[in-house]
Image 1 (cartoon, rainbow, N blue to C red):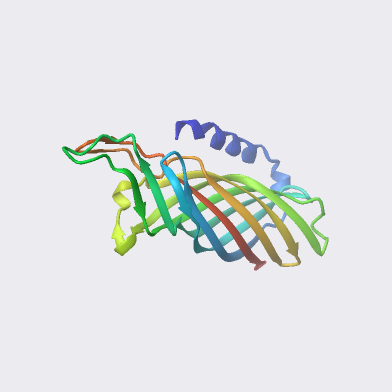
Image 2 (image 1 turned 120 degrees about the vertical axis):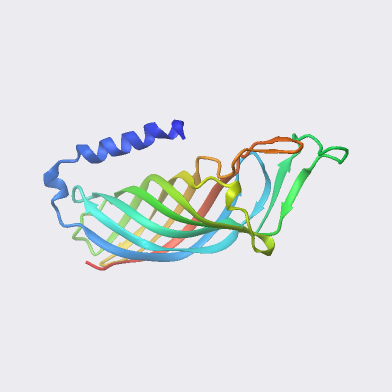
Length: 218
């Protein structure tokens, strides 16, 4: 987390340095939703299959100029993996039993409330009917729930927050928009914990590809 602080400090500095006159332009607020293809990555993951979920939330677009805006969002996002193989080959054996080697999970469902803050750029001015858009920025996710196969709750084994970065692009048509984005988790979502056979490090990270349709309410 300490490694991510400079990223957030830089982002806040950029926001505070924006001239007040630029931010005085009328912002817009809208809703967005779409399918979410999520998986898991990191050193502990041997293999992970995509799990289909969804995103649902709201955004505010704050113009800085004719082609640049800042877009904070609040999104409910369903993450996880359809199946995943976790590498525990470096973990010692539990008593007289063999090492775990690989642990296979048939389903992992993670629910997050995500708050991305995106810098959005378009080569076309606001007045154009059709506008291509590109965006990127940091995101923080707050864990709402975590279930594995048979609906086993394992929230206690995960961190309550997840830090990542979002990149993507799409097109806007009047009040409507269609975008594709990739969210890359930067921090491990799994806690390190002490088991009877030794310490088990985390290093499991979220990954997700999302296609979302949006509408500006005003």
